[in-house]
Image (cartoon, helix red, strand yellow):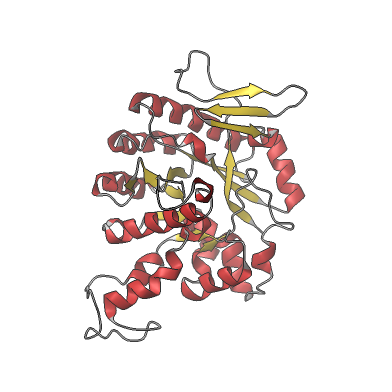
Length: 338
């Protein structure tokens, strides 16, 4: 069984009378596709983005048993007025629920909330759960603020209380040290690292030990920095016993690696060597299959690079689907016992 834990959807349209700042889905002559227009964003969206039947057909063609579908990241537009952001989130969440209702076992929906208003975002989580959605997707930064900022802690605490899953999608943030061409590559890697590190350093990870949260693209560069962070914390190389005489910034709390191993990470990192490092450092029980479909083409077959590692059977079972079930809070009793 394979669960694709990083895939996206778009609404096929928006209600009449929607605020002018809402997106639009414009028809494309001679095609069933539509053009997403949202501010400066113009994105041709294939029918598979918004038609459930096409989605199931695409799963079958790729060997996918189930998808966790989250809003296409441009919809996470936090510079909208808070009331408009809430209205947009509610419409997107209705669409996610409709898609999921087509086949709840194969389409597992995540919604969105207006993170530009943390109180409203936390309040809206109850409605997300009532719609039957598994959780929400948020961006790696909120108008330039790290998600580990204390102002977002009540939101994460409410998600933990309600048992909802969080998917953090890396989103470019303004940076003047790299050209714009790096926004979708290097900056996304930086953003992933910032978002996960901010939850660890800001206290959210410690305050919410039961929060089920995953990061797109393995949280970017986080894994490469964790051994250094662990050395600063406890003065040890290679996770040897703590040596506080060498520790630069000793701390009696959980180690950075321990905190990082509370998170989940999709393994869409484009290289078998990188996945192997993630398995060795974080554990196969922390990794998910992800594809970014249909914004990007899936590997054929799905998870081809991860399969090439020839993991132990238990490790492959974890990575291919059991970790996704744990992250979603849908673990069958026999899997929970493993």
